[in-house]
Length: 327
Image 1 (cartoon, rainbow, N blue to C red):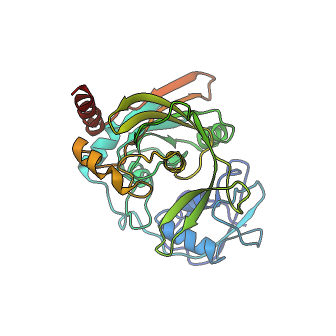
Image 2 (cartoon, helix red, strand yellow):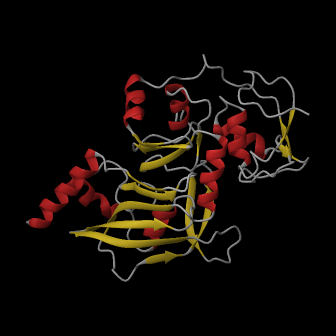
Image 3 (tube, rainbow, N blue to C red):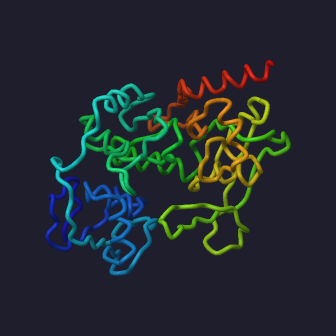
């Protein structure tokens, strides 16, 4: 039986059967394959899982399946990119990533991800944050602990060891990481709306675009979702809010604010046309959603609190709003 390897050959000529040990247990199959098929785009990973070419214990699985110790994973032969094939990050991106490090210890790195940078390659993106980091840094192990939407900026955690990855993902599952986001939403957010507790359902459009909508909790495939909100500042036509996602669903904050009647400014997926005038007035050219702070206890039992400052662009938007409010 083959063992998992960190650097597979550029061409996998035959089917491999990989046995999952305790260190891998708990990892999603899609993330496991991204690690063991380095150079394979995420679209390929999802395709071979969907077609049943990847199997666990001889059975078909979904991309979100979480591996268990003792599982036997069938990995089909695929053509993998070599290091020479891989697109390299530009010098400016490499410098930006190095400057974006907010926190680092033996287990993780926390970066202030810029808006517009996908966390991983795939779906038309050749080079994402994690692929770039692996080329910029000398670490032997780098894996995403969690994800942020491409247009969302702020705190993103990357594990530097398998042990660190398991520890941080356990904290996430148990709700022991306090995540705080700042968002600028359209209209006047009601003070009484301190939380949105509504289930979410993921859909994939014929175009391949992923959409999420709020549904009744009894809807098949729906997942319970909860976000808590606080008002930070009121402006004409919009509100700066603090959002704390208690659950970690795809597009959760964006859909919950939309459900509350106040979509995030600059959201071209869940926003509405009425936002156009205020967006133009304040010069906003991106989604105003920022992962502002992370609070957790590290592997040594120390309390850690990390804050990601707003980009210059978002600070200028808030400055314009204050000027408008003062008139």
